[in-house]
Length: 338
Image (tube, rainbow, N blue to C red):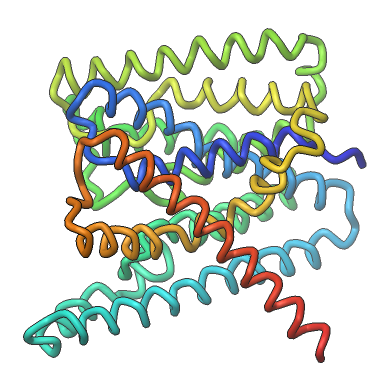
């Protein structure tokens, strides 16, 4: 099976986009709004890539359940490990920085509900971990429908839930979906994971040149910016993390990657993209650390100073990658000793 380097190459830009979303200030200014909107391709692409690679491993594989179990166990270990990390960090910070740590700790523990921890990925400062637990749920549902030979049916169902989820975000200005958040498996990750899985099973996309997919990706990127601007600036709707245009944007970007499998081959950026999950898991911790550093030297962490925003994002990205690489080397060293 030929490796698709383009997926890892685009993952680099996707994880960079995630860091930008989390480090740059609110999008009340037009430039920051556009940057935030443009970065919204990242998470859907990650889910689509996960579904695609999962399909390559299980389709036609008589040992598919063994792989599914191994894969989900691996993702769960990652989730639990980082959940514990952020929990310990949060508790330590509460104990060290609050005048009444007992009361603050009691308030903090109220968020440690089964629903938050097992489904929403909430409860700690590691808010980005929703992606990891959502991937577990999406993969489990996807594998069930794969065994039932109903993946196309699931794709339609997941699309309906994805569209419904829009009404929990910017489209709530028309009719609000009565849920606490749509940043969850049912509304976001399930559709894009199934989409990636389904794309691995069809070949009709090969009839068209990769440039066509790239041009369509650019078109729907512009449409997403326009859609977001219309909703949030024109209608004063709430902030949206994904839009109707995001569906087509993600589809054509992924088809572009499939059409150009050697894109990014041999580049260091591609290697970094292959480690995107590690960067994703740890970067929120370093956002806090660098914000504390900025405060110590007299800089305001959340500011519309573009140069400082760029330095902030650069530091978070580089330190997160370097730390994850160090952790991987320590893990390999420990395994070799055993």
